[in-house]
Image (cartoon, rainbow, N blue to C red; front, side, top):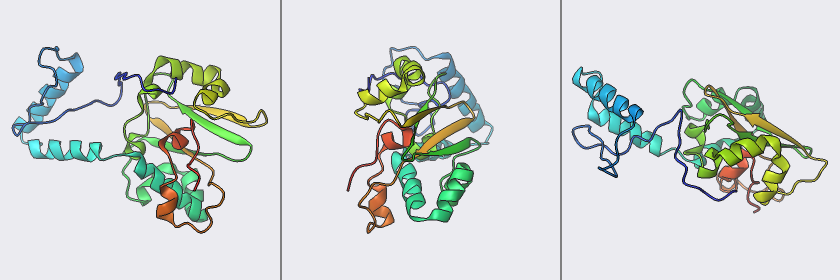
Length: 221
């Protein structure tokens, strides 16, 4: 199940594609009909440009900023929490404000950080669709959006984690957190042992995307 399935069913976030200099999208397949939402996006965007509220360059720049989002953003947040106890406390109290403090704009979403400990492991899912903290983690992996993961992560999380190679002791409590349209989660994984002498950048390199979803652990140094 952890393998990517190329499922592109997005409910809250949409792929905008590339833009021509006039603001019209390049379509990968000119024979494929546009969906209702694609037609609506094009109509609204062109109307906003025509009315002078936006320019095609501004739209392109925003798409570039969206495409630049990656798990490295979340990894930087996690690494700082590992080395800065005060920041860690702020992150657990209000993950949105703590992320903004580092310059990451997560928008109006309510972001919650949940911490893995020796006794508790957290797993993130969106049972409705594919809600995901994209501003910090980039695009969700394809498996995250599959119906199989969305249903089984809640019903049998321990079995799902084993399929990802994470076999936790029976004594470990697994907490599953269900994301929504206006509330997202990020896992603060436990800092790997043997990293006391590492700086923040080196620590960030150990943080994996899956460790911030809960389906994996950070790399070992």
